[in-house]
Every structure is written in C-alpha cells, then in structure tokens.
Length: 301
Image (cartoon, rainbow, N blue to C red; front, side):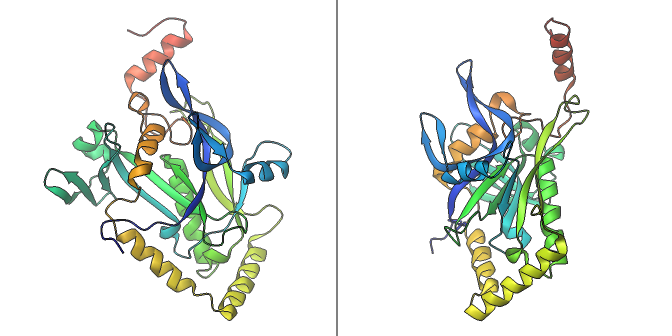
C-alpha cells in the first residue's frame, strides 16, 4: 500500500442537492430542493446523470426527496467523515484539516500537526474560508456490494444531523448499522440567518412503510445470514479504518479542483456545499445592508 495515499471506499456515483451554474462568466453553486444522482463523468461542464437517478424518480410521484440506502460499515465514523477544512483556491490542494482539537497543516516544511481551535477561533482559518466539510458514503441498489455513492457537504445542519442519526441507529441496533435498511431524506427549515427562506439539509431515517423495530429485526436476520456465509464485517471496518489513516488528506488530487469549485467558491464564501444554500454562519452587517437595499430597490454602499 502506498504510504501517504488515503485508501477510500470505491465510489461509483455522486449524490447532490444542487449544481453549478454559470453567472456573469463564473461557475457558482446553486441550491435545489431535491436529490440528484450522477456518475463521476462530466460533459460540457455538467455531471452525467446516473441510471439510478431515473429509476428512483419513477418510483416517486413528486421530487426525489428520499433515497433508500444502506451503509458499508458498522462504525458511524467510517461512513461519515467530517472535518474543518481549508483549501488553496489556486491549486485545489488542502491546506489545513482539523477536528477542533488538532489539525494537519501543509506548509513549506511539510505537514505539521498544530492545535485546532475551530474556524471561529482561528485567525488562519477565518482568513482562508475554513469550514466544516463532510463526506458520506452510502450503497444504493445491489449492483455493486462494496461500491458507494458519495455525498459531500459543508452544511452544519446536514453534518450534525447525519452524525447523530448514525450513532443513534448504531446504538439501538446493537452495532448493526451496515445491516439496517435506511433512507436519506431531504428536509427543509427556516432560520433567522436564512431570512426565513427555506434551506435544505440531509437527514437519515427508517425507510418509508417500515418501523424501527422491523428494521432491527431485518438487520439481525441479515447479519445472521452474512455470518453463516462467512462475511466478516469487523475485518471490513478494520480495512477501511486503516485505509483512511494511510493518508493525511482524504480527497484525491484529481477530485480537489472540483471540490473547491463546488464547495469553496471564493466569491460565495457563505454558500452551502449542497448547491448554494445558506449555511448556519450568521450574516455580516454588510450582508444585512445589501439585502435590505435589494428589498428597497436600491443598492448598498
């Protein structure tokens, strides 16, 4: 295994709740109120839709706001990784990645380990648009047992909610998270920071038409069948844990430019990775004045 290269779950597609659009000659994230599943291939600047996108849409009467999923690992922290991250917009390379206690920062002397006071308490982070960055891997369908779709986000709401749900489902099922039949759900909320307009975030729930008790019973049955077949879930979790630990930064070099463009645009520091939605970051005085000027038909100074 190459040292310094993070070995991550194989990805066969992407999950997003937004897209990049061109405005005034710049490609900027734009929010959406539904899920979209794409491949990892781009054509003319657009991600090519995954065949499962149409399949799932045919199964619902409205917008795609729920996706049936399962997880590869029993350990919640392997399915969802979230860190404070700062990227270099010129190169797309990660500059600093931390967990609120310690960080790994790339500099002229190499990668250093330093204290991480979180973005609000870090002058280096505030100057460079450091913010939470989460990656969730889920399996959809039965085409590839160990392949996954990745959902990337910089939303506090999504990261906080998904982390809580994963730990709760793991606890109540007796550490059978990889055997539970669950679904990703898109939820909306309004806050003072969003000026009471809806913002959307991703949640995790028991699949529609089922109960938590039924899901746990089914998970126990699946776990028994897997053990009888020789499926070693503990070894799979251990292999994934070692793979993540093999590199300082998770995203591969060929992904970083796309990540920065979609989730860390320089001119929209407050936009949400889930398609340009509002983050939980409070607006500045200038933000408020500009919005008030727009509402009054004028222009902020």
